Length: 485
Image (tube, rainbow, N blue to C red; front, side):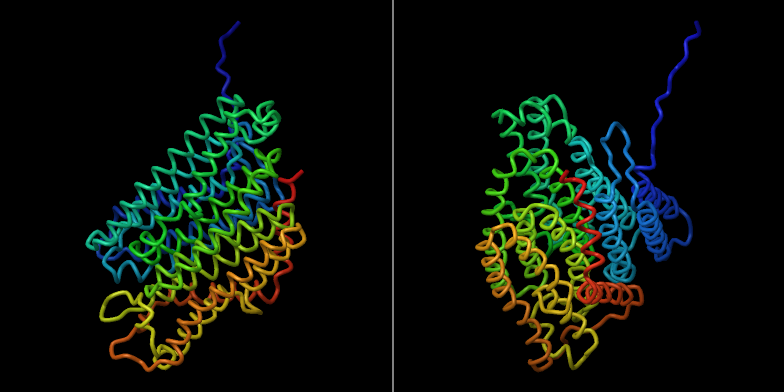
């Protein structure tokens, strides 16, 4: 009898989109060592090519159901939908960064590599079928974003943002890891399907319940729900604007992807309990986010509190439950990604006296100096309000409609009232752009072909999702339906 070493078969097809992105990140680091040393613009092109390749791979895999590492990684339509959202977000951020980081003195290969590595973590988070993969993917994403937030080393506010993000992120990760440990102790598994079918889940084991509570606290930090939102305004303000756009869209979409899978798979037996909890969180999150945004004069801080309010709206969909509620959240994330990247993209392309223009007053009279840019920002802000026929209106219509059909009428009423409150601080920016006299040395457009193209793509996305939402909404609902069986 000969001793043979049996090598297990490892199927990597479930990791294909993530492998393409991480491979592009490694290639960027290698090319960074080679000439030309004076300019790093070509590295942005390589990073963009890697993301486009990952997007094409994702689209080509639609309809497949690949699994790897004993169902720890799942590449189903649900993961593929989020992969599309994340790849679009990262690609638009890279396009905005090409001229922006060079202008701000931060152009380097490490920047693009970190964007790609954080995107890899986001893609893995969307495909996670096991809590161990959730934690590892979350840390890969977060560690890259911590460094990116402080990438402009000469700015004190950037270093402060990075440190706050790191400390609070590490605090959230400890909650998440402790919750995973307690769940494993209660159920003997970290696989989401096995957790759902364990006796501890059926019997309501106290260790199981505490573990789930800690898990939700960790996710609360990552998606910035109240009261775990403290980091968001300071990080959004201090981080480079292109990085802020990635944090506000890609990382939020990835965290929601993991949260929804955990809720509807591992916690399906406790749905009445977490629905009641999310009902309260949704109300508090959207209300505090909108009220705090009213007092902001800094556009990045205003959009930070606005993003917190939008998390509250998305929680409304989770409370509504079913394929219609969860599908509405997926569609909302797609619309929110295009809209938010567009808004931050305009800020990245505006300067005043060589500095970023981030104060509302600096945009006074922008419609006279640059009517096209003012109209572009206005459309993104109107979409965030929820004005038809833009994507934001349809996304909110689906969310609030799902809440009404699910019997949560008062929650839908509170969400609509919050949307009305939010209109004030968005419209205030439009008043400054169109109804105030231009100030000397006000915000001006900095020419950027790649940045302008990114804004055009985002604007097309916002209009297309508003005018023709049905195909995308059907894809979102079809992607989430298999999770609910």
